Image 1 (tube, helix red, strand yellow):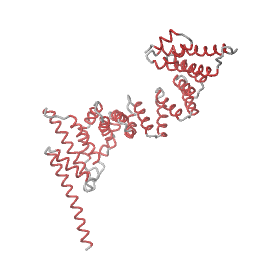
Image 2 (cartoon, one colour; image 1 turned 90 degrees about the vertical axis):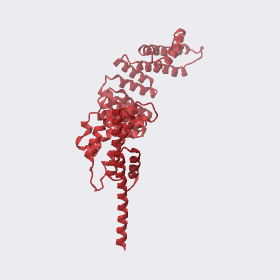
Image 3 (tube, rainbow, N blue to C red; image 1 turned 60 degrees about the horizontal axis):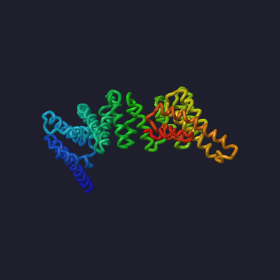
Image 4 (tube, helix red, strand yellow; image 1 turned 135 degrees about the vertical axis):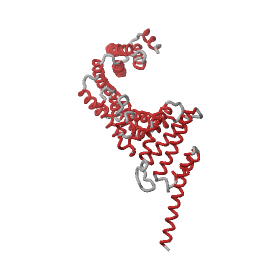
Length: 400
């Protein structure tokens, strides 16, 4: 009785599987006839059924239906009959996703890569529309299209790791791959999908035009995910590879200063200066660190060193002016205000001298960056006010 029971159970299970495979065949037939609504409904049932969900045959059939759906839209375009460009792109995307899934599963006979050759040929013929679909979504002003653009660009990049393309080494052979990976990372950043940025940005770093930007995306994604150790590792590597990119160095300093690690920040700045003591930005950042540490005298030294190396750097002039204004404010807090005090005249002279030292630096910042009022307007107005230069004060206050 036990043997009979087991045999009946086996027949029942196998029968269920065969029934679902019939659904796959019926879905394929409907797709061949152009009845895509029926085909998609039937194949979706098979994709969700545990008897067929883990078979390559099911996912391959699902991809074939989308392939035919895309081909139908292309035919409509040629005939100029009800062509839906977005639907065509979406069908190519779904086809690619289904084929990528099928490529990871065995068929009914337990064989792996049973459909790899056919799927690879189909994807090669249509993969350009993954790019076009991504661009279409990327340029759309509708809400949620950045995430959709990520789907398209990401699917294209995912082909590089698909078993069906293993022999072709697409990561190297397809010269567009780093560029599309860049757009995938950018779309991920715009849609706040930081794991996706982390996934695609590394390949995008190989792109000649956008490699540095991709590295910035990766750093931001790691920062958003609180992956501090990985972020610091990427930052240090980026600073070595792209020493002229100020953003990487500034990011590293921001991390140290935000965590009150000023000694480490200064040590890191000194390391960079030792490698390139002609880089004005390293001195500027070191001055900025001393400013945060309330050491205005050392900050002034570093800002002056930055200006010696780049006399056109408006930000350094602005910070120099600010350093002297801060010294003036600190001195004013302790200076006597009693006109009868013997020290009054001396303190007043010292205070005026500090504002006079700030004046030319703010004026130079204004000369170099007249449109960037944040660098000089507030500071210069304070200087003119305290030096009792009423006409100049009024003129600055009216500046836009």
